[in-house]
Amino acid sequence: MPSHRMPSEADIISTVEFNHTGELLATGDKGGRVVIFQREPESKNAPHSQGEYDVYSTFQSHEPEFDYLKSLEIEEKINKIKWLPQQNAAHSLLSTNDKTIKLWKITERDKRPEGYNLKDEEGKLKDLSTVTSLQVPVLKPMDLMVEVSPRRVFANGHTYHINSISVNSDCETYMSADDLRINLWHLAITDRSFNIVDIKPANMEDLTEVITASEFHPHHCNLFVYSSSKGSLRLCDMRAAALCDKHSKLFEEPEDPSNRSFFSEIISSVSDVKFSHSGRYMLTRDYLTVKVWDLNMEARPVETYQVHDYLRSKLCSLYENDCIFDKFECAWNGSDSVIMTGAYNNFFRMFDRNTKRDVTLEASRESSKPRAVLKPRRVCVGGKRRRDDISVDSLDFTKKILHTAWHPAENIIAIAATNNLYIFQDKVNSEMH
Image 1 (cartoon, rainbow, N blue to C red):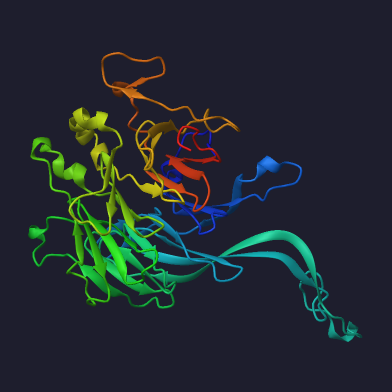
Image 2 (image 1 turned 180 degrees about the vertical axis):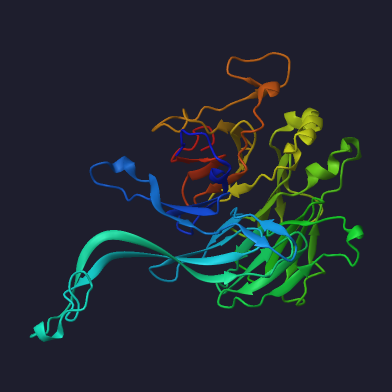
């Protein structure tokens, strides 16, 4: 759904999330807004129209704030959105900025009562002397109204910036993580949370790593993982202790001394971690690779995929323009057989775990036209160039795909490219599927 005006900073999409059925898709942006898209049902007249996502509701989730004690501005930017499993006709989601998490309820109204005894059609009280008979109010159909209401605000739980939230499979609790701590909240209790991880050293000068992302296991409510800026993953079991400072398992790949450079530590920082739907694997993204880890094997990942290895020679200039600190996300498809992550130049990458084939695709106005087929793109490093190849020197580093999401069951993906949301569906790519 590309827009044709110059993007303002507030319009830049900062998170994308499908709900558990894939019928709804939410985006958050730097201006603190949440936009919810709903998938259109298939119509008999146009059987191929199913899957079009249209705007369902837009609301302002967070406003800019000011912390007077610390003289700090708190941005309204939405860092993460997480849908709660649906319990009734209403939908619920959690959204967070750097400091405050909010629970929102989304409900539909398509009927209104008419025929009040004491009020007229405008809602004014009638003169009671004119009311001579009683009538039974009836529900009449009306245009659909989507109402979004704030249910709870979870504030004051974090000193540092919140980087992730994750809803537990028990559907009663969720956790929020910042650079140094992870808190466990009950969805019904806003005034207290339990600190389950604290890596803050007694002396901040001894600080060597920070928490970068965390997620609950999809099936075991006692297990969660968090990743660090040092490239490690720690799997924790809440049954073992109230404070999970001693992890159950540490997943870490020893560094290859031949690859050691000034940038090694920066590029090994894990920017995202996602459990597979099966719960057996974890997917991590660092600056140059995505890795698949087996929960039963801590020594090294079972699969490593190069996202854009051609940038290895460009790390110096990427450090100078701060791109080396970009935090790319990663996603599994519904069957855990294909993984996806973003890159520069509005490229995104897909890796088929079974065939080991990979492809580079581009999110652009041309590729988003109806029934357009995504053409694989190739980046070349010097030497011979094929006709459609793009040189590594002409990549646009301002166009980056940091946020992606995959429909939980179908081949539909959502790609956030700056202020544009692209939805590609069905045969996402004939080479891969």
